[in-house]
Amino acid sequence: MMFTVLLICGGLVGFYLLLCVTVLHLPKCKSMAKLHGKTVIVTGANTGIGKATALDLAKRGARVILACRDESRARAAVTDIQRESGNKEVLYMHLDLASLKSVRSFTENFLKKESRLDILINNAGLVIDGKTEDGFGRIFGVNHLGHFLLTILLLERLKECGPSRVVTVSSMAHSWGKIDFDCINTHKDLGLGNSAVALLGTYSHSKLCNVLFTHELAKKLKGTNVTCYSLHPGAIKTDIGRHSNLWWRLFMAPILLLFFSDVESGAQTSLYCALQEGIEPLSGRYFSSCAVQNVSAKARDDAVAKKLWEVSERLVGLA
Image 1 (cartoon, rainbow, N blue to C red):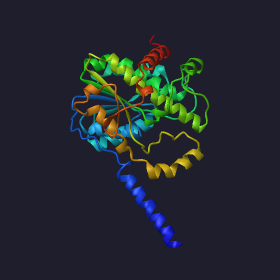
Image 2 (tube, helix red, strand yellow):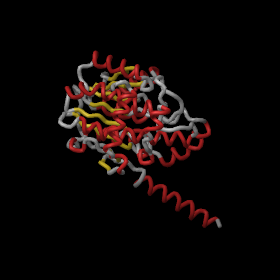
Image 3 (cartoon, rainbow, N blue to C red):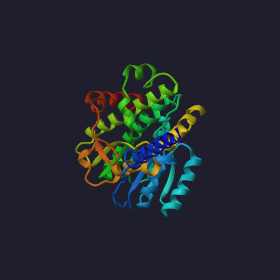
Image 4 (cartoon, rainbow, N blue to C red):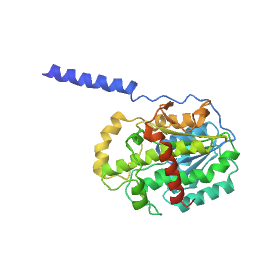
């Protein structure tokens, strides 16, 4: 009996180690690009993947703007990144993606103070119930609408400083998403319900929005020197669910510990899309594990992408 138990345990350990070196192993961005004289914005850069991304870019010499809502956490991140990178050109600017007024204020402030923008990384994301300042579902408002408006308001500066890039962090969860325009028009949200399952569903819908937004953005940028990419960072230990209830966090803790990678690994595909030479012809495409990936028909549906763009323009007051 004991031998059988040991055999099973050994098999499980072996299987887990195999996972670690195959499925759970994420490649590193190999670009050696230096960014002295370049300016980058990273949203949600005070923690997790965003902070790891900002640190790498700072080490390459970029002027890095941490666009964050929580000032105290952001200033602490600025101190950390400056110390670890040796780059003093790292600063915080207030941005609350749950407020269209804040997005407009941020862009106005940025365009007034900063002469360049070479890379915009739409990294921030959340899974939480509630409404934004403008009455949208919080996941919809932050993960899609806030970044949509931010990008549009910064496009001219990106064009002026090209070649430049827009990188939007999506997720493989987009595969389970759908765009319900009736729900958007009726409830100003991508889905209904506030259970953990319902919120994860809404999160998936928002990540599909990210992929479709990038798909349509690439069309609108054709003929310019700005390119754009969406991506899945991998299964990463972040605190995206820090606002979830205690039982959900307790349930997720062992799964995160065993099957999710660290934030440095999670930043690699963002860095690849921001820095890798020669991927300009792949503008509008979706990446994972530092490589372009094929997506399902719904994630490259021209009609839905165009309609989502038009609806988003109306919702954020651009139409």
